[in-house]
Length: 196
Image (cartoon, rainbow, N blue to C red; front, top):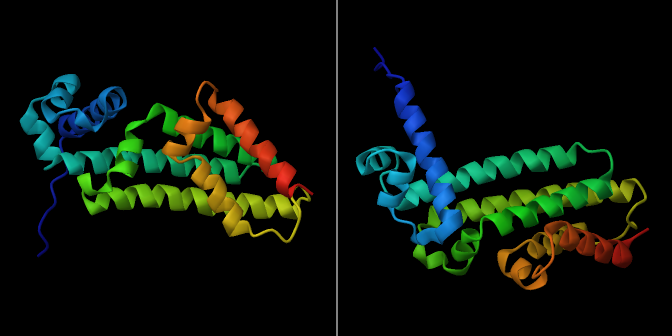
């Protein structure tokens, strides 16, 4: 006989969701220095509730990152289903830059990988890999549509565009400009360099 799995209580699921929302808000406001007790207070739960759902702060950070990865994946799917490949590239670049602008603590993760568990770094790599693969497919489609010249190194161009959305690059290149302005500049650079 198999052991019976008891479903989580609705209030326990809601508490975990509130903790994730609070953690993201506080990471956005204060970076990874936000403490578990602050996250619990913001979520309106006890510290024990946080630890019952996320045994370590790294587990909590991983769960927040997973939510961002899931949202990012949905954006990638949406961009890939857009017929206009250049419009899809622009939207994807703008969304990626906005993600970095809004969640600056991602820069902390990228600059201090030794400060977090390897699984957290893997989540960051997963996010970048998903982005790079989607960019490659959209660039290939742009070639098929005659928007970008054939013969380019698609994986290299996708990697360069993906790297342009890295927190450090955006901090330097995006100073004083909106994410749409930066995305438009990147796209213009791309089209001038490899346009059809």
